[in-house]
Amino acid sequence: MKSLDRALPIALLHAREATLKPFRHELDQIDLTVQQWRVIRVLAEGKACCATELAERCVLMPPSLSRILKNLSERALIERVDDSDGRRRRVKIAPAGVKKYDEMSGKAARIYANLEAHFGEEKMETLLDLLTELREVAEGEKL
Image 1 (tube, rainbow, N blue to C red):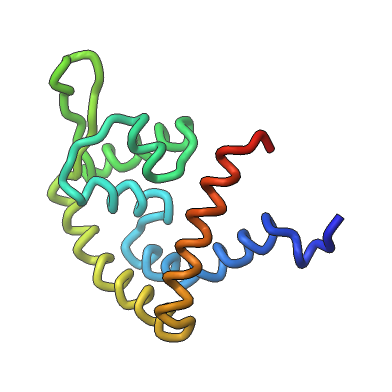
Image 2 (cartoon, one colour):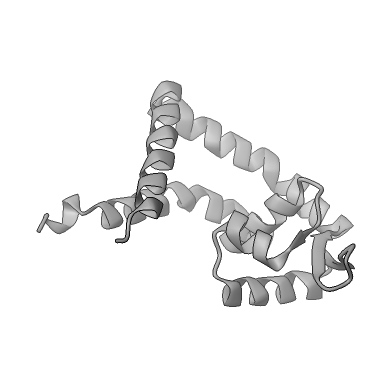
């Protein structure tokens, strides 16, 4: 067994936490969690989504997403809309959610640009490609 400091899941978690730290700082300033930001960010693309699609795109477990949607709805950052087939409900970003998105998107872009400038654009692209490939391999395996 590999030592803990060379264990892939631990290394990924350390990288995740270090990467998210500056985002969390900015999100705290506008009263959003990282998970809430992911939902706002997806919905800011303009398309209403059902909970299943949101959970997948935001990488959230359905029970967590339910709590997040309830909170965002109570704060009028999202709104529920009827689905075209009438059987499901979808959510879309509300004007207050657009305002939160606008407050954070420029900051997020600057944080990302700073990370990329220090890490290197080519290395960042390679890392993202490798992570995508790793995910595809892991999803294809029975781990």
